[in-house]
Amino acid sequence: MVTMPRMLKRRFLIILILPLVVFAAGVPTAQIVRGQSAAQESPERDARMRWFREAKFGLFIHWGLYAVPAGEWKGQAIPGIGEWIMNRAKIPVKEYEQLATQFNPTKFNADAWVQMAVDAGMKYIVITSKHHDGFAMYGSKVSPYNILDATPFKRDPLKELAAACARHKIRLGFYYSQAQDWHEPNGAGNTWDFGADDKKDFDQYLRGKAEPQVRELLTNYGPVCLIWFDTPRMMTAERSQRFADLLHTLQPQCLIDGRLGAVGDYRSMGDNSIPQAVLKEDWEVPATLNHTWGFKKDDTDWKPPSELVFKLVDIVSKGGNYLLNVGPTAEGIIPQASQDNLRAVGRWLKVNGEAIYGAGTTPFGTELGAYSETEKDKTGKPVFTVSEDWRCTIKPGKLYIHLFRWPGKTFELHGIKDTVERAYLLADPAHKRLAIMSSGDTVTITLPAQPPSEYDSVLCLATKAAVAKR
Ligand code: FHN
Image 1: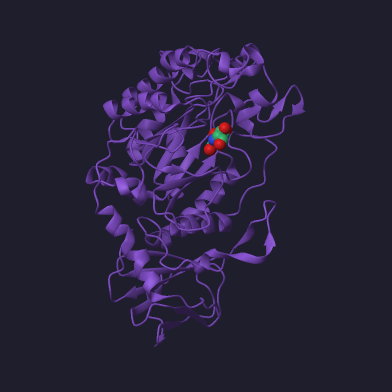
Image 2: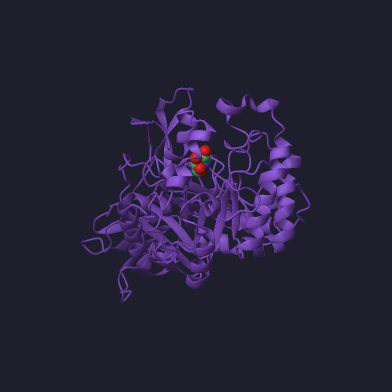
């Protein structure tokens, strides 16, 4: 039997009510870029953020010339993430550029990629339009170093993806490396060809390439749900504002991630870094399925669907979005294991999606884990041990208890006195009522002998009082 340590009902209420009080403040967003803090919430921002808050699960795609070497350069395996091979192996621009002549992803099928995202239950797609290597994966008039002009492929995959996304009614966003551009003498990052960054005319690069390319992306590809900027080296507030102004002018609904250089529309967590507690602001965690973003032929250490489902639920219960990456090959194929594992998540979501899309954060918190009283990390701080028994997401009038470990005959929950009217498992198509016993602020639900779902069996508790949605 899983029991939750007792907690104060007052704390429960404060957690539910506080976001409503703060969001109601409606402070205008006249700050640099667009404010993301709850104190800056306005009806306009609320409307703009709505789809993102509902979506919860997105597909990240890292695809570029780096898929050709796939982690190996001149017969040597290059350690680190695949899309950094140019930097890690200090490949001169003149040599790296040659990869374009070999890049011919004839197996690329935009509809198949989008269909996979749909099957996985993902609600938005973010693809690299230009990564740090400086190569544009779309037909750019700003620089000939792009897939349409420099490869034998001679197609614009972003155009094809935009059309496929429109057909499948899924949102599309673009990753754009605004600061690092290892192909350009004045872009940040390439010190092996062009010397130290502080000697470069960075604004010349920004104005001459990055800003006009972002303009192209916001002009030629229909509605763009977000621009995913990254690694904001040398990005002052003024430089960031220039990009933000472009977005505001060309596509005011388009969101800015948290890595532009000044405050964006939401917070981007570190790669694969899930916070320990609920965060009230909007946030997203970019994450890998193995250990690389761009395709690497040697990296086959795939996270199993059980781990992906746990992470998705964990993230949603803390108020975030999960942007999960695939790294397609140079032929244009998403690795089969990535496809299989994502589709397994999608099958779970088909049954249990009600507890994910648009769901609010846990009103509890004790189920997330605890700081060790004895163990310390290198800096002397207590180690946080993540607990993986259960999580909770909410909707008005519903508590969804995600059971990752089947607790046995009963599940006991404390601190929700007299509120549960009905209990059933989402995986049971008949939603057969489960027996409920209430005693004080403890509710005990009688469960069947076996969990109905392989990864996470969701127990829905319908409550009398409507529970506030975040
Ligand atoms: O340097 C990049 C990396 O290649 C990858 O794109 C990730 C995705 O979040 N972002 C940067 C590192 O944080």
